[in-house]
Length: 492
Image (cartoon, rainbow, N blue to C red):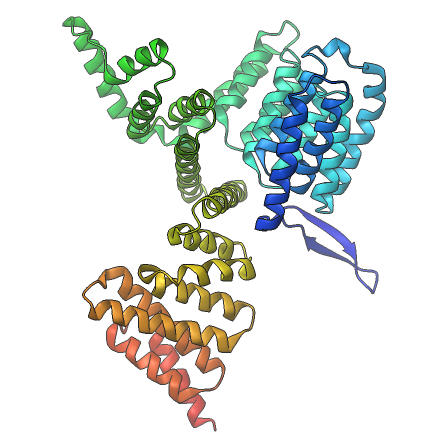
């Protein structure tokens, strides 16, 4: 997380933590969606000035939410259309004169956590030249600070596409890809550098080797090497025996080429890729399916599920790497990957809550993610809706109580904990309790006891904690809490 400094009243420098942008409210998300639709309508027109108006709409979207990939993609695609995908139509002199200033402006606002202002400077520069590699990389750096990995990677790839042979561009992009643990892309940058006549071939070889080792460690390839060799051996033996029948995924690939409009084939192929942990391939297949289907909701949701699974897997890998090598860089990567996953989940669940207002699971899951990042007021609304659903009543009330406690609404928190306890017990009496329900009950008893101890309502606190101790004496620090209540009584 970025840090800056500001002057205190006494004139001393004190560090200030700069937080990345939080999730948008449903009202603001809807407003930006309207602006996006207006931009899309204008971008599709051929009348003079249509692309300029579209750029204004897209700029407002990017400024409003710099972490959303679709806004950035739409803006750049529109500007490419404006210039007929021809770099020669850009006024290089006017653009180059303003580029350095724009880079400084982006950096200055980003250092203060002024994400919208930083993004606006980049959008203004793109209007003059959407192929400006310096601004593309600056926007990638901004996205990194905003903890939006998707946007960061988009701009890095755009910078490379804009000047594929540039040694400096590839070096800068490789460094950033490595920080984001996108080792394949980082290695590809150094292969391009190596192919250049002006490059230092020895340096390129060293970097390719080092990045390859880091990739192997990060992805845990050593653990899977034996099984990979076994699969390869079996394949060679099968070919030697003349067993060259196409596999199901190969057949599906052929069927998709013959009949590209059959969406069921994309789904089945993606499912096979998911089963084999080939998530990048599954994402590629479903991205194509989204285009072919014209953006059908069920196809989009399949793609979102795969993307979330990939983000979850990246977090697991980052955590494993940090456990093996607990360096500051490894810990920072875990934090970044986790933040990116939660942000992505919030985006997906927000859309699904709007799409399926009677689905309480989506409301509960959205509330849980909002609570994770400290958006307690927004989370409260989701948990209050989710508790109306009987299966979610106990756990939603527990989460609701914790949110109320965070914002110092102790009476409301206590009411939610009591409702959670009652719902969990009722579920247990009906025979539908189970282990999760028991954990919810224990959590609610514990939270109620701790809160009441803090409020000095010792009799009620003891009642709840004693009940918890009877169920699970080893639960957290329940025995210590009961001893504390005894000491508080004796100190009166």
